[in-house]
Amino acid sequence: MSVHGTGASSFEIGWNDLIPGIEPPKVEKRELLLIEGGDSPITPATERTLRLFVTQSGGSLGRVVIVPATAHDPLDCGRRYARSLVALGAGLVQVLHIATRDHANDDNAAALLAQATGVLITGSHRAELMQLLDGTRALQTIQRRQHTGCVIATTKAGAHLLARQSESPSGFAAVEM
Image (cartoon, rainbow, N blue to C red; front, side, top):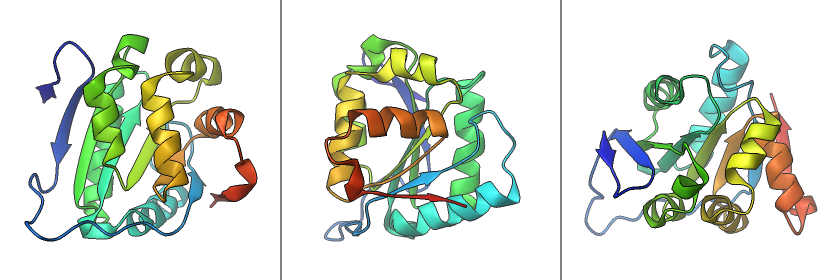
């Protein structure tokens, strides 16, 4: 795991360096995929949604960032989802642990999210998620990426936060599988 300055921490699995001259695919769809609660076991229904998420995030050329925001054990939750996404064919998978609002406003956290083709936000407590991310650079970056084609998968708590902040929620399709 690498620690970015005094802010959020992250680790990654999958390929670490971009292949020179090859850019990850630009995601054309702007969907919001709903998954079960962040600490829940990965069920067959969640796995189907994650498979779609991996595909729409660029598959083996995609850059996925997992934000286990309010999970009971965020790093374990992030590792569990990362292993599943890699097994489903995701390229670069990074876990961004945001424990405080300072972490959510960290330059390195925003930079990591700005390069994502897919963002997976876990967390099952809406009030905690809102308190942690509402109005932060991390959330603003996720929203900017969402509007430019990044696929977002989240729990209902995350969907509520994104819909609440979105200027044009009708521009997105929520898909619950």
